[in-house]
Image 1 (cartoon, rainbow, N blue to C red):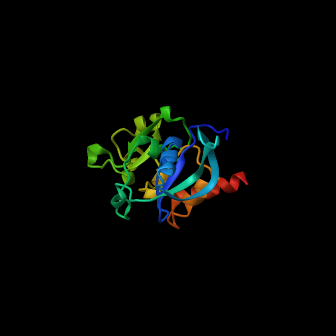
Image 2 (cartoon, helix red, strand yellow):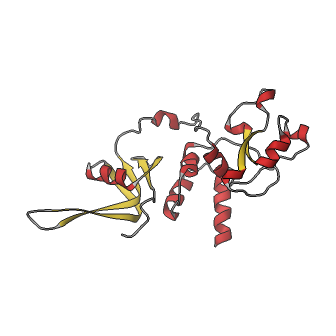
Image 3 (cartoon, helix red, strand yellow):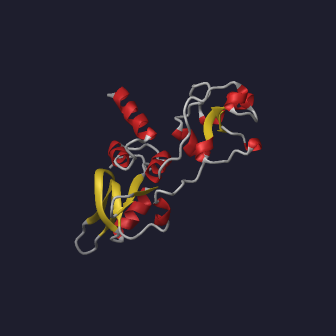
Length: 204
């Protein structure tokens, strides 16, 4: 199957909880070791292995977009409702769609920055609910002030993503069946759910 080898595979546990994105090598290893309970979605890779010396047949391993593996993830305890995903600029910018939440324009990541709504110098924390994506111009203008002090309007309220939402934020080139699976694990009132579904409506 001719496909970009950078396409990620979504790994879940047996109960269907999204765990992480893995490459095709790790997916093939799990399949070969008999660690995959079931697979979902389209086949994204067809890997041709060695040739059996007795039968002359070549082994083939099909890798689906989503694979459910046996065993527990080493950090499963972190996926509870109280779990807070690690904060990174990459995930933050994707949460906010690469939009500056002050001027409303979209920028490449190189022109974006992490702004603390309540500045660190005023006791603010470096947490999901106190940071937003801001273009460097707006961030420099706001400086060490709150939006109110700087006379700037915050266009959206920051929020902490759930684990499933964080998996989405970490993904690259997410396929339709992978996105459908992840959306089923988003909270009903998820802001990301509404954003993704609105984007789909525009493409329909």
